[in-house]
Length: 297
Image (cartoon, rainbow, N blue to C red):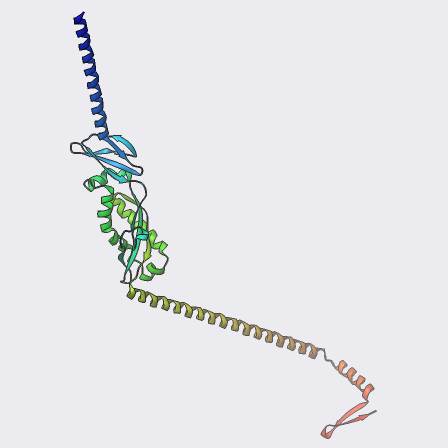
């Protein structure tokens, strides 16, 4: 009986030890799984890299993923992001991040700039490999920003200072977007959705130059308007004179035609008739010297 009790106690102890062992294994597995979980936030993708296997072809998308503890994950934004380089923090910059660009007339003018972009998901592995493990933010802040200003100047040198300051910037911004998208897609795996000059900040000397050009342009436009008005007035006067001449000619032709009709209507019979009518009314009329008129009844 005693042996049976002892044997039961041993069995219970083994069962307890087994249960504890299983619990410890599960706990260790759970903790290990926590360390192996990788969360990719919305709008991002992750590139996987390990010392043994190098860069994996599979890109991690939004959500939770179980990865090996030996694998590192670098995140890249595939949602729309904005890079803002402005004069003051109201536009998004913490400091004065405005910068100078060159123009076609050899001027240099300070601008504020913004760019909407995203990394191209299908190019992420190549981008990661090309930049040796840098993440998306580092590529934008240290590589894209380093060449951005010179790339913008490659477009602005096709336009004058006045084009950039007061002209139609939509054409310039369209050219910037097209050019930067082409360049940055090839160089950084970035798609540029929109690139825009959002403001211009001339210094005092440049502002004086701009004001002088604006005044000259206004004077030129005023002179052109006055010349156009003078042309219109001259044309109007010419048309009026031509109309008057046409009217006078028509009147002269009408009078000539009337005289011709009158002349053609005077016949000898008509003359004799008029003489007879006059004699009946006034008698014979004779004209003598010194314009003396003698009437015989």
